[in-house]
Image (cartoon, rainbow, N blue to C red; front, side):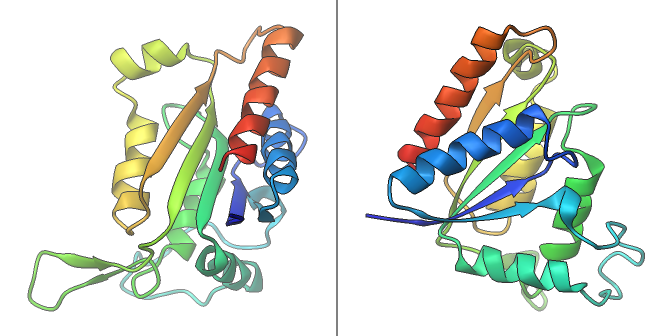
Length: 192
């Protein structure tokens, strides 16, 4: 059964290894008969700074309106990005800050500590590169970037389950290793 899949490339450089992973995933997903849309965050025209927090909602630029429409359309969202300083790149975080707004991604209940998760019914997969060995990121650093994206953004908004696949260390990796990772991304797309 085909799915509507949104791939969000969170690396600002489309020609990065993350870009290659995104393309490989998309090839696999399309080969399996899925509908796929791609958002390359580095190509979007928007201000990534949330100047007043959520006290004053900034008008959304057309690319962000289209981003919300793509998220609404999607049944499965794939984020492809590197870990920089323990977390996602600032541009991807800015995209999330500006798009996952109250009233779109979540809504606090009046007089309550609880909230409604407005993006329920969707799943996600994080395809994340890093120069740190993934075991070190997990056991020593305790996966701060993974926890942020999975728990405090996606699950907070109702998106679950959230699968995470880490590729690393990318630094000094061989061509054979990179090709293995690209094949893995393609397989994830085929089995989304």
